[in-house]
Structures are given as C-alpha cells and as structure tokens.
Image (cartoon, rainbow, N blue to C red; front, side, top):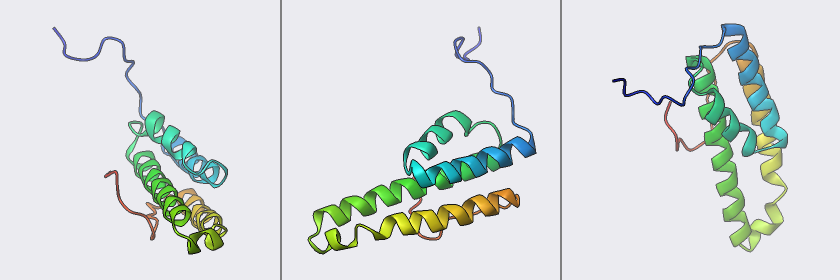
Length: 118
C-alpha cells in the first residue's frame, strides 16, 4: 500500500516561463498585499519548481520581516513617527525583486530575516 496521501493531486512542475511569470507576480502583488500574496504563493507554488520555490520563499521571508518591523514600530514611541518608512522599503525592494525575477535571476532581499529556508 502506498504511503502517499490519496486525497492530494500530484503537482506538475511549471515551465521555466511560467515559473518566472509567477515569481514576478508574487513580488509585484506583494507591493499591495505585503504579507498575503507571498503566503499564498508559498502555499500553492512552492513545489512547482526550484525557481518559483526560491522566489516565493524569499518573498515570504521579506513579508514576515516587514510585519515584524511594523510590530516593533508600533510598540515603540518613536516608531509611530516612522510608520511611513516600511511601505517605501517594501515597494523599492519588491520592484527590484520582480525585475530580477523577470531576468531569471535568483534574487535575495538584502534586509530580510531567513525564517523559512529554501
């Protein structure tokens, strides 16, 4: 008897073009949906190829880092004055990441804590 889950459907790998397209989409959607787009991308796309796995993992780690930054800013008095900074940071870095993904590069966010490993 097989030990595989009988209720799960096997996922076929994506073509390199689709991996690149989804990587771009996850980074770009992360601008508007900072944490949720990378989370959904990670849950649904991580097993579809090495390129997309790298990018959704990096994007999710960056999203978690930005959420933690907001929590730290929210609990500090001076942080309330700096609430405008994280949207600038995540917009710039997500645009860079989407561009690098469009070139087919394995991009790593420089200000991200690696909570989830590839």
